[in-house]
Length: 233
Image (tube, rainbow, N blue to C red; front, top):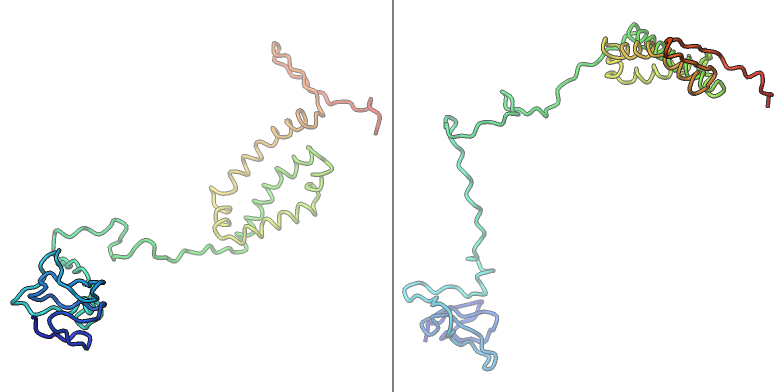
C-alpha cells in the first residue's frame, strides 16, 4: 500500500478514497493512474494507458488540483525575437517610404495658403464674366423665353457674383482659375467656338435659316425663313 498523501484536505491511504472528483496520485499499486469504478464506487488502478508513476520521483499532486492548485501551469509567452545590433549588415533595410529621419510620408505638412487679395478677386471675377458671355449670348437663341433673362444685365450680374463667391471660397479653385493654365484657355476656346454654336442653333435647332449648297460651284446660299405666311396662333 502506498503511503498516505494529503489531497484537498483529505488523507488518501493506499491510493483509495471516496471522492470521485479528485483522482489519487499514481503509486506502485496504480503505476498507470486510477479510474473511478461506478459499480463499486471506488478508485481502482488503470489497466490501459502509459505508465506515469516513477518510484524515484516525488508523488505528483492530484489531477483535479493541477488546474486550480498553486502549482498550476501558466501559459508561457513565446520568446521575443532578439533585436539585431545597430551595425549588423544582415538587418533588413528600412522601407522606401521612410525618409532620412525615419518618419513616414503620412505625416501632415503645412500647405501654403493662397492669399486672395482684392486684385486677384477682380481678375477672377473678370474671367468669370468673360466666360459667361458664351452661354449668355448663345442660349437665348435656342429659347428666347426661357433663356432670354440670361442676356439681361441684372440677371447676368447676379449670376457672375454668385459664381465668383463660390470660387473665392476654395483657395485651390481660385488659384487654378487665376493661373495662366486655369480658366483663361477655356474661355478663349469657348469664344472661338461661339460662331459655330450660333450657326448650329439657327440652322438645326431654331431652323430660322435655310441653307442651299452648290457643291459643284462650291457656293452656299443662306436665306432667313419667312414666317409671315403663317397665321399667328
